[in-house]
Structure formats: C-alpha cells, structure tokens
Image 1 (cartoon, rainbow, N blue to C red):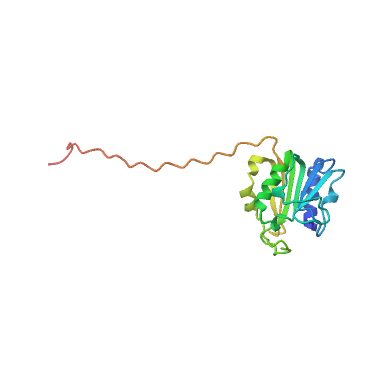
Image 2: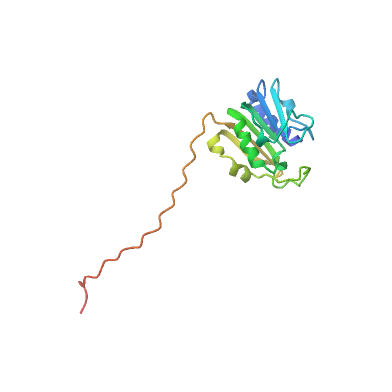
Length: 194
C-alpha cells in the first residue's frame, strides 16, 4: 500500500541509500497494491512481494512470520501493513531476520493518532515508536537507524541499516544490594558515669 507521505519518505531513504534501490534483491512485505505502491522507486531489482492476501503486486501469499527462504535481502520494505497484522511482533522479527547484514530495512505504518481504517482482516492496531523500540534491539542490530513520526503522530516511519555483526547489548545497571544493618559497638562499660 502507498500514500503520498509514505512515498515521500521512501524517496528520501532512496536519496540517502541509492545502492539499495538499484540492482538489489528486494522483499516487500504487505505488497498487495491497494492505494498505490513504492515498487516504482526500485530500478532493475529482483523484487519479491509477499502478502497475507492474493492480489496485484503479490507473488507469494504467506504471512511474513511464516515465510521460509534461504535468501537474505538487500532491502526489505514493509509499508502500511503492520497495523493490519495481529502478529506484527513476529512479522517485525521476520523483517529483521530476512535483511542481510549491511542491508536496509524500511517500515512505515499508522502511528498512534491515525484513525482506524481498512480492517478487513479483522485486526487493526496503530504502531508507536515505543512499540518498535521495545520489539527491536536497534542499537545492537543496526548501525544507522531512524524511527520517527510524521504529520504529528499519524505516521510512524523507520529505516535501518543492519550491522555486519551485531554488537553486544549494553549491560544493565546492577541493582544495588540492600544496605546491611549497621553493627553497633557493644557496651564495655567504659566511659559511663556513676
């Protein structure tokens, strides 16, 4: 699916990372063309579209979390689909897994303030920055990433370049041990007044 703001965002990502839009191996998740597509922004690419529903732009009908392939992709794009996916957390994990090291992941979705729309699959849930950050280890997995809102909080937009090698997670601060009770000196009887 595509709308103007989504296409403008993907164009801006293309300007920043043109190598991921030309002669690349691309996977589009949620590829059924409903309101337009970003497919035209990719030049001479090996382009695969998957969706839960058959329709224009769909080569393989499968839920992203169930998509099995030996391949990794130079670019994985998922636009305006996560909010329609009851299993969006699993899909998010799949998107990361299917992106090759050094590859580009692009996501757009309905942000927290967008009005519910087109829930023909029986599910609709807006996506927030917190949702993405909670479910992505972005600092560990990505060398460069942006997660932002557009049009207030109507749209959530993200791009991320997957690290060649994941970094170790930041250590969690150690909890302070509870304070031990103070030992008091036993009275020896010295220093007492009689």
